[in-house]
Image 1 (cartoon, one colour):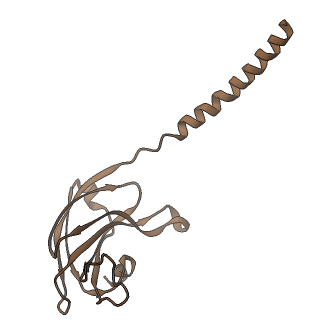
Image 2 (spheres, rainbow, N blue to C red; image 1 turned 45 degrees about the vertical axis):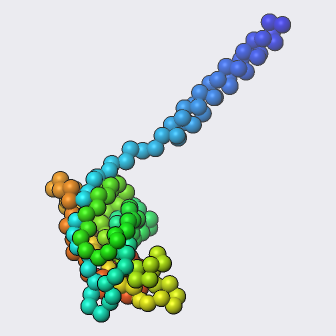
Length: 167
């Protein structure tokens, strides 16, 4: 009986020793890294180029200009926030930017002329879009919590990546 209990105790101790690092690993895997967020107020004006109708909801997206580390993992655009405006005109929107997850900022917008929520659906009229980029994040260094911009929607039916090429 004593022999049996000492073997059981040794096995139990072995499992405890093995289980302790596994438990610590499992618990630490549940915690994510700290995220540094920067509150930024976007203010500006969105209008449309001559030749396009000026009525409709405006879809606005805020992206990091690029995300990922190094030349192999870096990719253009990383969505941070998306919102809608009832019409063209002034913009005043507060966005929380994760500053360690990308570089630069891009504000992209398009005018939903037919109200379907889709950019240039088949059979729909060409909907104007545009983007403005802020390649460096100087506003972070300056401590400015406001970013002013002006955007004229002038390119029909292009998404944010092509809008950057057109700007």
